[in-house]
Image (tube, rainbow, N blue to C red; front, side, top):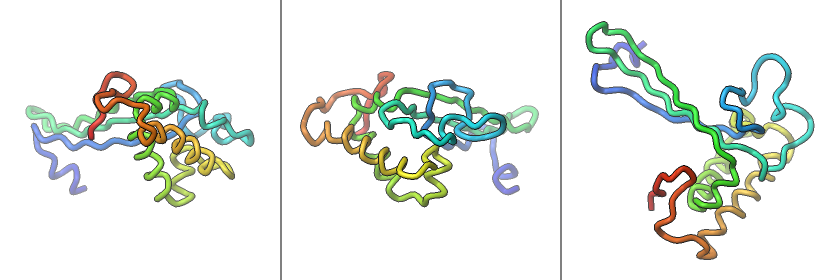
Length: 148
């Protein structure tokens, strides 16, 4: 694989991924084996009660052994926390708008009407920036500055 063969020590590759979950449990998959998680059960969880799950993944070649190290950092927070970051809510909505139904299902929005409900909720959260309810120096949940 070219990705692995071109990986150099000191030059890690990274990517991030996100999805919407029904619980804040870190190790709960958005979908998978065993009993169906709430996101695949017939009852739709209200958008205001969903959780944003984010993964930061890295691939690094170790200098001495040449082995490849894969790391994952998973973060989860209530989607409602985006009220403190209206620009992030707007960005998430734009991302969802451009997705196919299959990609929306992969992100945790596979039930009929679920994506539309989520877009409406994200628009409400994003409206805070248009109404001027936030401060330009505000920070996202967790204290990270919001890029402008």
